[in-house]
Length: 627
Ligand code: GCB
Image: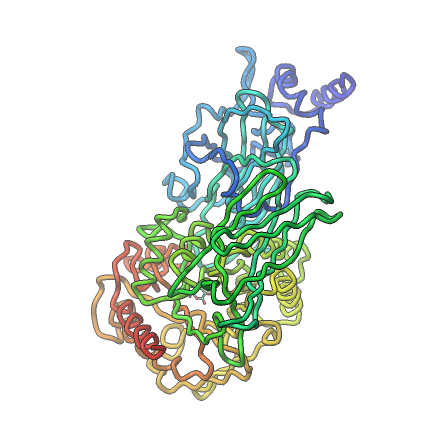
């Protein structure tokens, strides 16, 4: 230990050190030396809400760090004296140029852009700190769980690194049991949302790059051995009406230990089965139930059953709906019956004004608007939304398309980019694979064709299927050739998806007034979803139907587009762009856009535009047709 400190001091004398070394070494020696007490980044815990939690939401101190002074020294090398130490002067002459306790506070979860007006356009690093009380527990683990942090974050607990996570929309957890001390503990999070070419999403995207700890933060208490993952899903294609149905069940412990008992019970169905883990810590089996007794989840009756899972002596509860989703030719079948997806696209923004949404209330407001439109389906664009949204949609009977931000010009040949995209896909599926309402995993949006892109997306599609074979896979494609009013969809990815989806902007980016003349050629025997169409209007701006930005222009565009897409053979659904006006730095037209994409059928303040009613009426006719 002494040698280490001495060597370090020698070196420090030759370089320009800004701190009073001795007092800081007193503080940090414990941080630098016991490398053994590191935390562990763990696979995601399934159904975190079933566990005892201590919320770390609330006030966090924050420091805006434009040049990452708190992480790099003046030669751009990571500094051991970083802000993560939460250092304090020990003597009057000590120089420490930051103090979290004197820094302002921000409510977490939130995006910093709408919390501090200085940070509206900010993309960079912000440090966050909060303290909490803990009592180390011998027989339990403490996981530190983040619902999402955008984009790149590093976490320290009591000055020791707990781990790093990259990707702005998926949850992650660290085992911090060994980092905790009795009494006051400090967690420090460095969040960096600068955009880079190799990121997912990449440098350009049409939504606000909201930075920060945007979803819930919590401490989660687990037993030493716990159920890391489990799945209960209804098997497709079995005898309906009188026959037996099968629920496939599987589970995995956090450690490869044989001999643990895992019991699954569905009291309402009087089902119970006990399995014993194998040497990989896994179990798998089936539960048989009479088809007559089982009420299937559907938009009309979003039935969920309480499912109780016991591991040894601990029991956890989930509520799970059972349904099947599959395709037959150009049809999508929900529970074996054709279903038309009456959808709308949604960004994860608060219903009134901008800012990241993250609550059941936000979800309920947005989804209630979707219901008023007549929707039975939403496309949650362009990244996995918070769990409140997915769960609330499931409760309200709304089917979901969930996607990862492989958007536009991804760096197709970059291995790190692929690994990042795959991880986001993995974690999206890992969090939500027990949600009955999710019917489609989408792997990309509007990506430019090339062999490299095909290889990247091909690998992703196969990976998605390997993770979940019970749902449909899709991606939002683009129409590749259009001449003489004939639009042709051609995409090599057609073989790898179950549903062919594409975005089209007839009447907005192209061919204004030409929608009635359009013909569509989609040469694949698969269901077709128009994943986007639409145009912008400023709420309250009225005029002729050929006057851009008026509600009348948008209203007319909807009328013409709906008539046009209705003629597409195999049309199985649509999710027009978009429910609500949303913030985007690309939308700079003063007085009209003011940094909002105005394609919402509802304004950023929740006011319904004329197009809302056109879509509603069309969905009504679709529903009536079914009856
Ligand atoms: C698209 C994108 C979406 C944009 C939209 C638009 O095709 O998928 O993210 O916001 O167009 O408004 O241009």
